[in-house]
Image (cartoon, rainbow, N blue to C red; front, side, top):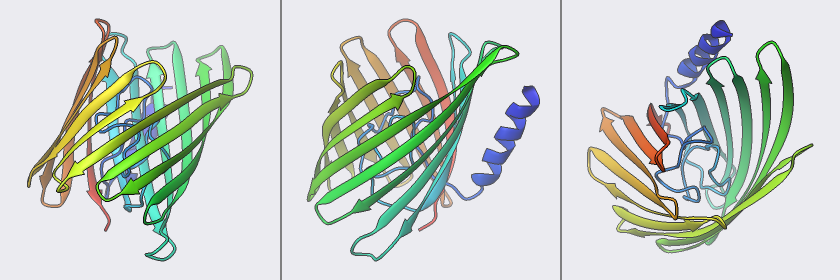
Length: 253
């Protein structure tokens, strides 16, 4: 299985040779830019209702308490006219925890952006196994929409697993940008609130998100060097979950 892991990581590295930042590919990572942001490469929790910004991305993250590891690569392209741009995006991730658990997750998304409305759909397939014991497959669906007025967006998303064990989740929220340099967002998933902000400078961007109740925090610093974006992430939830992550990126616009 070690050979499979390094082969997968090697493939992601080749994909990311021309890349840009993506949302977190793992279920244990809180998105520091918010799940309902209007742009960004797809992640596990992110809405499929996003505007197209062609590019690729690569992210690694590790949960420090359990050793849970995830690596993911993503990309998107723009199709159609400039007035009605369509977005086609994909994400691939590989997760493992010691010798106990493995997962390969594949996700595709499509969306269309009008002047005041963004709508999107997504599908994910998860192949999971306990080495030398058993394996199983699950299917996941997403749908999202955002109303956009100037620098304000109001968004909703539903996502759920379908199969022997089914589940459904949702998220609602809003984000406001001030002169494209500073933003603030709030999101609610029926259990907790995520609030956060993004601050953009010439050579770096700062991201921060906080979750209440049951306090959690996610931070990301992204540096811009000669057309490349290099970022590091840190987060925790309660007194047990702590994770570190990193990645690098580049827009294809």
